[in-house]
Image 1: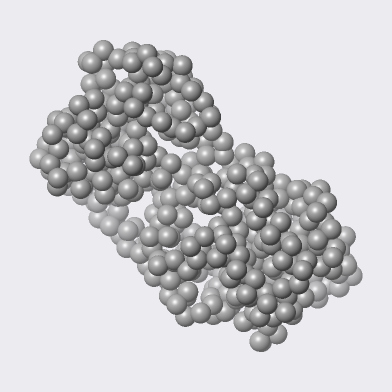
Image 2: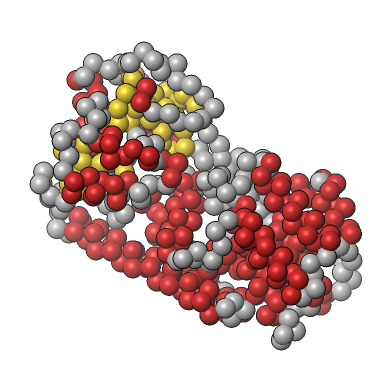
Length: 438
């Protein structure tokens, strides 16, 4: 189950927390609603399929406040500190440029510094913008190597222009507050729902960061282990400021990612040591119900933007124009672990801001993004079913094949195959539309 269903419920949850400590002032509520509107106006609302959308921003704000209120009790922070954390959490990821999904802290700070409405609201709340910038700077990840050196200089620069420029003790305290915000940022939504939500967040992060699907689980496990092993003190503080069920959510989600990683290693062993083969197979148009169910479950593992026939997936399997290849384990009768599927371009509506010049000419097949079951990526199965798909397309007399994939992948293929061209590039996702001339 998910703690909050949508931005309005998160917004109300934040308002209730502010009210509980008498911080629900007119200016703080205005800042909350103005920030939500900024995300909406810049295409970063809940329907933006990237990790750093309005949901993430509000979830981090909620977790920061909830845990921060608990830290008032042992005097780790004051009510004024909590107000700084609230404003910083609320603004920490708003990057309207978004050349990539991961916000660039400098861009965020630059926007805050130039936005007159935000500057006015911070002044009315008696919050020093330089301290807000220092706190946001500390949310950079990963916190290691040259990043620490560079960011420390940046933070010190903000301190030197702030109202605590001569107070070393307060500067050190604000560094701790920045660390608190950084851990709250990473715990965020993972403590507000079950593994279905956690996995969706990981897939959103992977898609918008243009990671290969093979890395989703590995990098998620590394992300959590890094935080728990290298920042145990601050993790303990943030976590124990949360209700018991939220702590359980986070730890259960970490455990589930680790279980998936163990399963990936077992599968890897079968391929590397036992020589288990993956076999691409051409499927007929008459698909059994059992096979349909397997294909649908694998299909649902794709990030939502890549589910191009989501509304009629089962019906499309029986369409005589559909080309379908499966990836099976062992031999042609083995378990299905992936598939490549597509059909005439005219049967797809991308709802994107471009039109393929060949639409309506009946000369192009669209290949939907290849779907492979978790754990079976990285063994060249995707390449083999894609090549089999292209052979079928050519045999049916089509002149072109189009599809979407990661920009880096297209660029690599272009080096080897001269018949590939970019049709449309999309940022920040870098998941681009390309054409193959057959």
